[in-house]
Structures are given as C-alpha cells and as structure tokens.
Length: 274
Image (cartoon, rainbow, N blue to C red):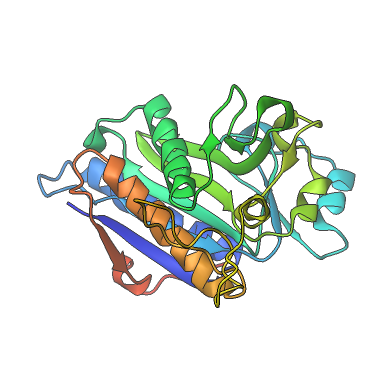
C-alpha cells in the first residue's frame, strides 16, 4: 500500500478543500457501513493553500460573537469558517501548507494520541530536511527555538469519526506572519508564530552564484535540498512533497512510498463544491 498524495496548486477555497476531505471521509464511512470484504480505502494526504482564512476548532463552534468574527474577517480581507477539528482558532492562507490526512486509524495501528504524534513527527522530519530543528513542547503544535523564545511553526488539529481521521496540520512556509496578530495562538499571548522562510534568516546564505538560494548548499558528508523562496509555487510543492514522504515513512501498512495523484482520480463522478 502507498500513501496517495493530492497536491492542489495555487489557492484553493477552504470550502472546496473541505468538500474534497468530506468526500474521502465518506468513502471510509460507507465502506465500514457496508461491511464489505473488499479492501478499505487507502490513506490520502491532501495538501493545499487557501486564500486568507481563519477557522475555529469544535470547542469554539457557536461561541464566537459577531464582533469576534468581524474582527477575524478583517474588513472582508479574510474568511471565517467553523471546523470540527480539535484546537483553537487558527489561520490558513497563502504561504502555508495545509495538510489533511484522511485514513482509518485501525488500518494503520493508530490511536488518537499516536496519530497526532505521527503528524508532529512528520512536520519535524520535514523541517530537519531543511536544516531546521523543530520540536514538540507541552503546548500543542510544532515549535522552534529555545524555551525562552520558542516560536510556533505548525499547528495540529484533527477530527475523528468512527476511527476515521481527518484534518491535520498547517505548516508555515512563506506565510505573512502578521495574519497571526489577529489571534492568540494556542491561547498563549506571549508566544509568536514563525515560518520556515523566517527561520532561514538564521542560516548562513549561499554566497555563490545561486545567491538567492538561502541556506547551506553543501555540508560535509551530507546533501540536503535548499529552498529557493523567490519561486513560491516550487517551494510550496517541495515542502508538501517532503511532508508526504515523512508521513509515508511512518505509516504502518504503507511501504514508505508516495503516489502523487490528481484530485479527479480520487473522486469518481462529479462533486459539486459550495
């Protein structure tokens, strides 16, 4: 079994991505309800970027006031949607790889805790591939920097329904960080968000002919890719592919390989998005 990876290029409206996710979840639920002896649907990682969008977690559904929602919409510069995932209000937008992992926990010997840990470790492994030492802390998400100045690099929030997992992570790559000033990440006002691009500023840039390529191009005994932030579509796809490879290497029952597929290939028939 391989992990199927669907990467949506450009900007995808949040409701469209949610509809694709719900379609994949429904395939799992219908299979369980049918009690079919046919193989269950395999795992799918859906990666995309949205226009500026704030979402709240299930604990906050129906709890935000009209004024709070208006503040998040920023005079119609951003959207606001309620979600069923865990966690608090967060931001998704251009420059962030949002990754939804849809799978059956039982098919991969996972429970709620180990599933979240797999997502966190996959983000950490992705960052390590680009010379960044990310980690988990007692606070939700993935962080970088010393405890005295730790910065949030990725949010994690999942939803479980009859052991079918959905939602996942939001990994900041080139996102404009001022969008996070309108929310309090994890309910921790003293903590700030960061991005891979911002953290790369602490890495010695290449002084050679590829001067726009930030990060060390050569390290003795090691060879890792360099992110070229001036080519944003390429960077976003590169990070999304790296995350997919990290997930595939950790999923029980998956042979460690990723199959890149199109949106059309995972949804036979016509699906109408909101």
